[in-house]
Length: 316
Image (tube, rainbow, N blue to C red; front, side, top):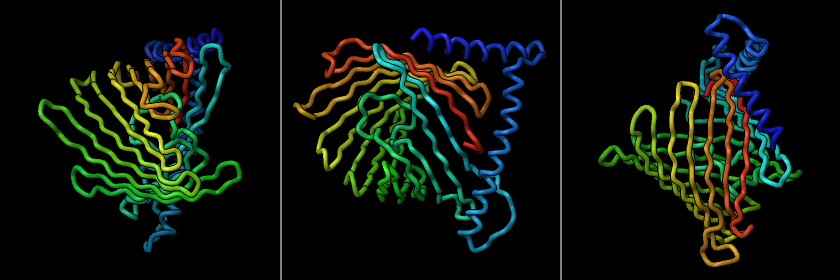
């Protein structure tokens, strides 16, 4: 834990040194390294967009050599997690999304290993039944049926432990503006695969943006799988705070409950504070101290910390 805290402290110092050097019009070794890395990142971004254009030309009836300035991107995030009395755990998340402008940007080609979720935030959850993911590849279709109604569907293949698993998915979401500036988001997502059968995720979020600095949200979710046949509920209260155009804070408290091995009972309580800082528009880190209590551990207190480092290639 001490080593991790030292690493976090060093990252914070590097970030502050960049701002100090800008004011002093000097360049540190770290800032020069970032400038070199940005050149490499720009090269990769151009190649990704070029590859997307070639795919778009192949699928369309009117090919040309124009390189589109579209929203094709690659997102890679490396995370390190340390729980009390446990070893370090590392995980890599990635998503490649190829936009196809000639098809009116309704179709995307994607490769990813992160879960699909109704939740638009990078929320942390304990024992989420949807977390088990292999490498997925597929094509998706998105359309706005009405001004307030969005539809998304897709088909693809999941590769996990040398097993190829075809799947199909679809989702629909609706936004409702209510009185007193409260906004309601309703979403339904279904997922069908050969291995896990039919999944259904229903979510309800009500939120209000109080100013350019603060946003309050109550996000709730219900998940069901036909093979497990357990009712899984997730409920949370969240406050989002904008510190600057580079720094953001999130405060989250949540509970999870299900009827696995018992009647419907709360299985976990969790709270965390997430600090995100964008070193560059394409490079960020998160520092997330966490606190949780789990029924499986007799609700003993458990402290932990997670550090993420993320990078974008292309545009997001």
